[in-house]
Length: 297
Image (cartoon, rainbow, N blue to C red; front, top):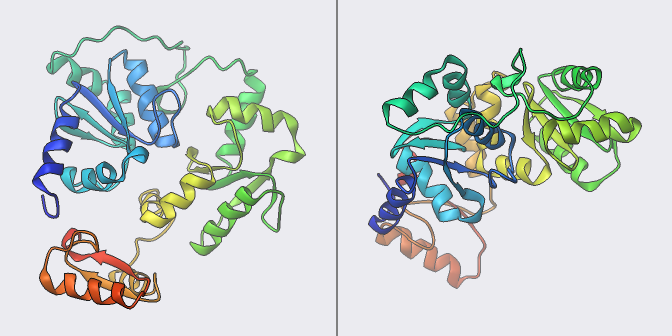
């Protein structure tokens, strides 16, 4: 894998193989930090399979390295016996079709039976949980969440946000030129309290894309910086994939001084790149960098 040290590669291989079923996610199964990670963890619980997990937010080296190692740019990533199965959409599709159960069976992975409460009709992603919400409120929340492809539940409204975190998410969506609708949770206590239970997410704002919870302001900001937000929006058909020309313009303009180099400033992969980094540091110049070895395009 390009750009991976043998030491990091060995560590990733060890992590991937550390459990028969291994989930690399944002947060932990008990406290997920993104809706997609939460969804896959819930699916595995529904399947009744024992799994290990690794919080990629706790280790940037693993987070960035695994993208190259697996050639899969987003998280969560689900592995079975060291083989990448895929991310959230693939896990949902495999779960709903029964294929996931077959894969576990083929690999001799024991299923303990579902601990989840199943109802006659399964909800989103085939997962239903006993939330204690009335069916009327559940139906209302589901309708609100799906009322627009991009939906923000926030304090205040986009023109007058009532908290800094809500303002931040609105700013990010405006920067990305994304059309969205919003709901002011301060205007409706039933929705405010109910959505926390419905989404299993205790704070606001909450950003949903095509009915899926993405997360709060920290996660949205993090996804914007890493380019993951654009990728999710493109995959969901909300935003056209950035052209190479636009991508290059954005990269070039992402920092006042920008270095396209082999490797990173801390681990340059060629002498010329190393010299330029040293010169900029000697001058005390702050600069951004892009490792061209990670992206052939």
